[in-house]
Length: 463
Ligand code: HEM
Image: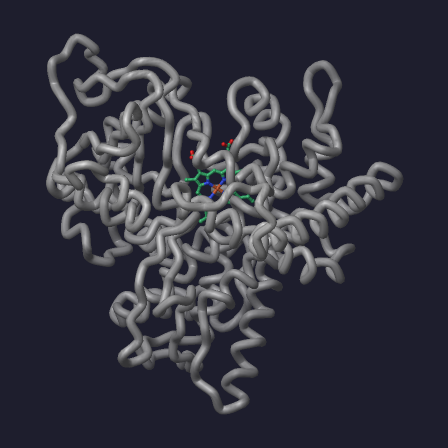
């Protein structure tokens, strides 16, 4: 696999005679990557801007080498770091090399499972709030909900409470609004990387971004200053503030601010996406929903889930893992080769862009039977052990594995258990849900990000 003397060449696929794959990269990158795998196989050379090599790699062995085996040779490209850093500064998502390593070491302890356990009750409470909203929809005699904004509201609530605790609950809505507004602009710049206007132009979008950043800076720096004066509750911010290097130094206010913003960016919409697609898949597969419902009824019997319940709800977790197989929220992981390398016997020159896509690899027919089918049972432990590690990587892998993995799984497990035992979400006739692969994989109806579904109360035994 890493034989640099090999003569093998990456496959190529048809493209525009002059512009190569650039138009498709701008217009519909996910479709291009799917086509690349279908027509070209496990490693495909795409044509983008002249002088820039661009590869798409679908095979788990190539993924393993890029993320883990030779992970130090692959950085994150500018077209990812530039928009992300507009809000997240030099936080964990964008930092590279030694600065990244130091920040990761400082932040890691805050995400250990034991540290996260006290958050379970808050997560259940936040899900309960969504349940209350849905109850009032039913009480008004209505039966339609838009699941996408409902899930983003829920995960933003969880993210801001976990980071800043309840002492700023009055600010939570303001933070959530500003993060969501800034995020839209990052998203736009990431998906229009060849056509977005320069940042110095005072377009309406750029003015919105500036306003949101000003609001967030004011709140977050204010909180940090306040906490430096009087210590507050033991939330994620407190843990980040307490973290120290061997030499005794901790994070500066600026670094704290960048990490806080990064955790918001990285954490809320990804988890909302995972939950949204799970609802859609369950609605399309009533047989699987019945299994889920039976597990929830047996273990919880109508009460709210606690941390101790989670290991006794394995099917609920399998539903989430399988949903993230078919619809991975982080659907693409772009990298740039820092030095020459070789993937699957083909040479990768320094400077080349290498694209990995969990969406494509998660449907690779050599590693997944009936890849297009929704079968949560694949994630039963006996089946999981039979697959190569990197046939499934919704949280990435290697040194840059998602730091919030346990957090996200706990949150989504609790949210799905709370809501699925009380509500059934069904498909609305004639409503076409499409994929919108932006920063995360969003659902879309027409031009809007939306997931309208039919809501009704779940009654045990009615599946
Ligand atoms: C279902 C939910 C989530 C998914 C699918 C997800 C996915 C990912 C993936 C694929 C990466 C690696 C990106 C790369 O290597 O290019 C990543 C990194 C990261 N994630 Fe998550 N994530 C989720 C939730 C969260 C949450 C809840 C948080 C924080 C509370 C979080 C914080 C981060 C951070 C800070 C990084 C950068 C880590 C580093 O490079 O050191 N994520 N995530």
